[in-house]
Amino acid sequence: SYDCQALVLQGESASQLPVIDELFVYPSMPVPTHFITPLNGICTWDGCNGWAVGDDGRLLETHSFGESWEMAALDTQMDLNAVEAMSTQHAWAVGDSGSVLITLNGIEWFEKYTGYAQDLAEVSFASALTGWAAGEDLLLRTDNAGFNWDSQEHPMIGAITGLSAVSPTQAWICGANGQVAATADGENWQLVEPATSNDLFAVDFFDPFHGWAVGAGGTVVASFDGGFSWSVQDTPVTE
Image 1 (spheres, rainbow, N blue to C red):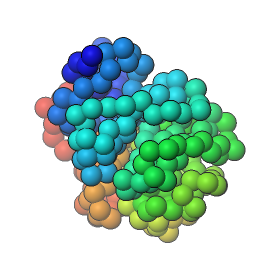
Image 2 (cartoon, rainbow, N blue to C red):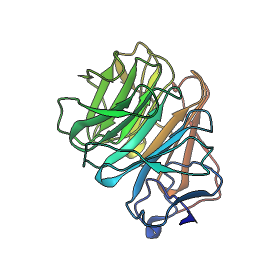
Image 3 (spheres, helix red, strand yellow):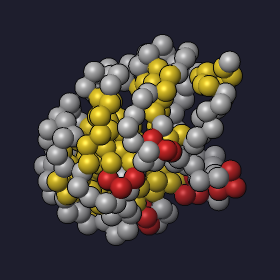
Image 4 (spheres, helix red, strand yellow):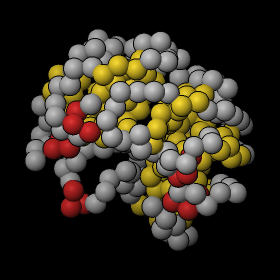
């Protein structure tokens, strides 16, 4: 049997509200009632095809606009923390101990290790070939669809908590104390002037110019010039 359940993604606990992390809005999604493993990330490419990942190597997939979900057969027991898709065939999931899962047909997944031991919590692809993954203080880039990864130096202090890429040359990361760093060539990263001292937990750019980051205390900051400058936006969420 199936039942409608709410998926709360990437929040620590109800007691920590009103921390804003990542927000995805979907209709009610039937999932198996016996499925109690925490889910940590979700994505969809076209609204019809989507994936959700969680602890113990669990990966759910839908190909019916979220009306039904099935468990994907995986060979990993690693906790999976984030998932990203660039088409109905190409998607990636990242998890603990540097693990990366790849699908090239939207159905079958296989595992590739990055060669790094850090837990990966973020993934963002700019094309079917080029993307970044991040976790703890590690930032990785691939240019061959996730088969090989190279670490990149960055100026962030502490863990990278948010990652967004819009092209092979433009991407952004965020972290504690309002830190935001950007790359304009895909290789070199620079800190930008912070608009807040609050910790930031997620960043998302819609195009090369327009992006937002969210974090502690209901913080929302916006950039309309490619991340070079940021301003705090009013929200109804407070400390």
